[in-house]
Length: 442
Length: 171
Image (cartoon, rainbow over all chains, first blue to last red; front, side, top):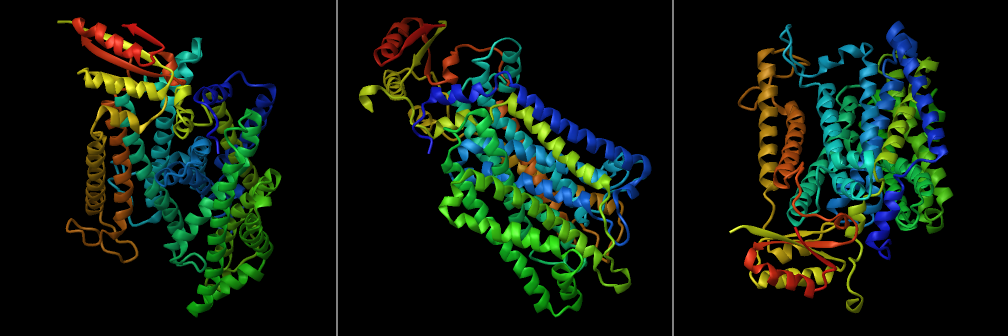
């Protein structure tokens, strides 16, 4: 718990993180910017020479970029879970961690949104997906899950960005009241003249509640729509009714893992150990354990469904997944990283050990990336026609560089944000503290 | 008669609430409270009703849902192309099942945008001209702004300072 802090302490300690960065911050920024530059160079190759640079070959025409897309959308979901769903559930532990998680959401969606655009091969024509009046008088096919995706992802990006900046308004006001010079001007702009008056708070809290109430079904719908990109087709291994809840649970698992991966170094570097405490990490670990168990159950259900369906194509696909060419990634990623390893969080000693938390969260990140890769690539490698079965798929160096570039893009945005805005919500942490009262009244 | 503004700065939450209650009891109704964080006591002590932002949200959400329906049906009627043997959605809702997804997303999108507009309109944001404020209100102090007439200002000032105000300013 963080209840022994005072208002003033929270103000000072969080605003201190916005001061002039130390050299290692610029080192980190240089590394992530370099990663991004690599990805941008690789994408330039894709644009210049075509998507053949990306290792696509018959029958696998969805591979790394769609994997990256689903991975990054999934990362975003834990942020909304923590900021919106746990807000509606009045989970007090969310107050210290939700800002970082929400920023992660916005940048993860900004990263995810790039991939369908890269994947279409002619990114400059991606606007064709939107319903706009064109001289050809064509409209999108609203029965296609790919068009649903356009609506779901763009709504998600808009709503989560607005939600993030609404949350920042009172904190920007707190920063404004302490800053001087150009910084005062910048925070004044983001504070929109916030005073913290009773009428402002009244409207603000109502509005915030509605944002949370909208973000909650939105986050469930977004990953359901992403899963329909697969489930609406008839490909064995994709065409399944369990996909939406299975994908949503997977998204939250990967996102919570990413929150842990980011928060452990962040709180150390920013000196926020007394605000983001072991209590918060334990709660996150429990969330990871829950979602890992759901995901593990869904993996098992997929196999059971395949067997019970009596469809030889379906069972053929799942035998291929477990024992075919890509089997090592299945056993390592889906079974070991996602289902078994997080079960260690049943032990309190593991939940409260930061090193263990950090290492397991990284394994889950890798496992969840591999899960999407397996779902996409093994299904396409082993469809109905035996003559088109293929173990040939090999990612090219361009695939790897674009993927590394996406991590660079995400962390560059995140690092810049972390220096500009408070990574812990000042006003919401104060909300769960005891307000200052007169000594004799305590 | 011209009205005057008073601003009391309070380091303690309990005294700040007590002072507000006393002011209201004495007939000072034009009060604005300042707080570093949202606290339900503020609404309770001022006896305010629920915020009207909710009506903005309702209108936005309904409009979003309706515009999703009109957009998808009209566009697919305008260019009817049969995909996978599925019917083209029509105005009587037949064949519109797949359009539920864009309708749902637009409900949320417009609901959220109207929510934002509702917040900014009602909370008077962005606000450039500020009548009374103290930078400590965003840290750990609370404030009471009283608007009253010239002849009552001394009485209000007395209530503010007698109930633990660290500072009382005439603005």
